[in-house]
Image 1 (cartoon, helix red, strand yellow):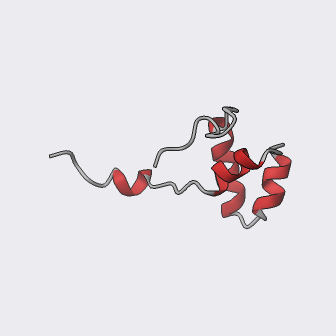
Image 2: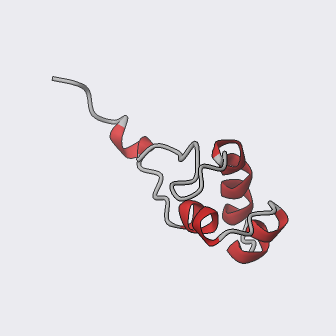
Length: 65
């Protein structure tokens, strides 16, 4: 739900790459090329960014009871 700070498999910091990744994907670039440019070579790091669903905008619409 929140942006991954570290890779779930190896622990490499990924949080600082999320904004760059998201902007480039939204502009229409290929995800594989973006991940290569960000120098993410391990499959666990690539899967962490590829599999992340950014639900934070949806969740913040609701107030706590």
